[in-house]
Image (cartoon, rainbow, N blue to C red):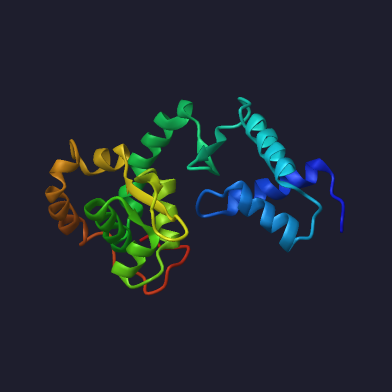
Length: 201
């Protein structure tokens, strides 16, 4: 088996978490690196590597950190930058939400908490990409894990979602239907295949 320096192992883990569409746990990292890539690693080494990365991204040099969400890890912007991100989203989100994005948001809003597979089943198309983009825009957030087999993540709408649609709380969700109807004329038709332009006009 190929021996890799600690720095290389950290980079492997960093790249996996960065490219993942949802939180990645240590068991998944261990399986990928020790089994699939045939690296001589154990659970303790994976944990130590994750700890090093968490410490690394605590530095003020980075606007985002590596955080633990439901026993998995993902990158998330730091609170110090939420205000500027929020202002940016106010200027760009409405322009970039397509009918497909609005449709997915409506499903999550009315069915929350809901899994990706439930969203996909309702829409009739794989929704991994659109869910990831909605997460990046802070319009939805992780609400825990389902009791279903595999413990898939659950999603719910965020405070940013309420702010975006001008709602005080989820009790005002019926108003969302009116907002969606108003938006449909300007946000375009849904693409038949999920792709990199899914949130663009």
